[in-house]
Amino acid sequence: MCPKAQRGPHSPIIRKLGWRYHLVMRSLLLLATAACLLAANDKTQILSKMDADAPRYGEISRKIWEFAEVGYKENKSAALLKSALTTAGFALQENVAAIPTAFTATWGHGKPVIGIMGEYDALPGLSQQAVPDRNPVVNGAPGHGCGHNLLGTASLFAAVTIKEWMAEQKIAGTIRFYGTPAEEGGGGKLYMARSGAFKDVDVMLSWHPSDQNGASLKSSLAIMSAKFRFHGKPAHASTSPEAGRSALDGLMVMANAVEFLREHVPESTRIHYIITNGGAAPNIVPDYSELFLYARHPSMPTLDGIWDRIVKCAQAGALATETSMEMEMIDSSYNVLPNDALAALADKNMRLVGGVTYTKEEQSFAESIRTTLPADRLRPLGSQEKIESPTEGHGAASTDAGDVSWMLPMAELGAATFVPGVPAHSWQSTACAGMSIGRKGMLVAAKTLVLTAMDLFTDPAQVEAAKASFEKRRAGFEYKSRIPADHQPPLNYRDNK
Image 1 (cartoon, rainbow, N blue to C red):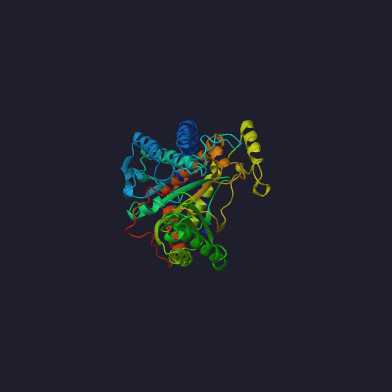
Image 2 (cartoon, rainbow, N blue to C red):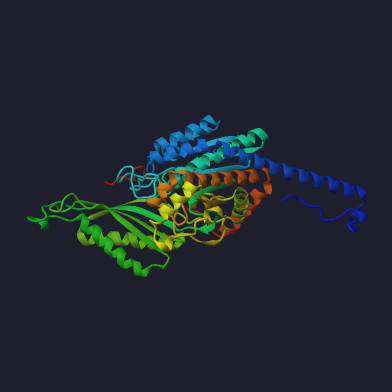
């Protein structure tokens, strides 16, 4: 809001201090008002320009949707983003943290350094055409069920737009795009953080596809995940079973022990797993088996204790079956630390941008896809046009962005890329992410990121407020990664051995 005069020319204070003071204050007020109006005009022009540029970025999001590459394998997706950033004049740093698909792209010099995070990994098994009924592009293939094709592209769109505005207006500071692979359980940001990629950043801006619009004050669940591999002795399962030691038996004892453990962990704990290798044939005692397990809790210190007990379940499985067990840690991400100042700033800017309005064809698509959802999932059609107010709480998802939020001030927001009620990690969300509804939500996110960055670059008080909120929320806690210092990025974690 632009400043207003609080006292008239006949105020007792002004009469006492004299007409010179009055003239100086009036001049300062006029200058502040002019600056405010100029900034508002800048934002209006930027939003109009982004509307004109949106189709080009929509095409990029669609290409990444078609690539549908899983974590650490996003070679085409990363290359497309890097090409667009290089063309826009950004300086690339590739192979960050020894990860081929991790990179940064930087433009500008000095402070503040504002980062924008982009993700672009797909999910296994969620291939889907952009239609409102189940119809995979390729059966069993990956798909963008979390909308990361939109996430990475909106962040690209925002970074390039901010850079162009900074260059035109001669704004001091640095804008940096972070290409962060394998968010879906691979922990790419953890290894980038360990390499020092975020150490000079003042504020990080992030967003995520959703079925509603709004800045976030919610936290998430901390997560630990690992692959537990059991090794035994093969034998003929019928003629000489006594000669074998079943790796699958070790795995099953572990899994049963974990099921018993569920009764004795805090209620907000989540534990889920799959068997990625259970043996080669029923008549061969399996000499190898693998279980991929996630555990989550709102508090990382509490999760530490739960995880120790899960590891003991795995050790017990090996002991009981005379097999051996090895564990490969895959991910260990903190819960998100909200930032009050950044949530308020992003909320203000998203209200300037507005929500998502459907065309007649999009409305028909939305109505059709909602018939595939359970009744208790449904949210009102039309809610995608609104901006939800930031509220405290815990979401049930996890993200490696959580670690970044404990290292520096980070804004989080969501945009309605999915039809109201559509859950992430579903074929329905993959369909939305590949068509115009997803792209409209992506534009809302990109615009909000740009306006928020503009405020941070032009008003140092906003950066200081973000840092003050960060220190207040983090008070008494020191961030420490749970990933062992010598553990390398699990580049093949989506492979089943």
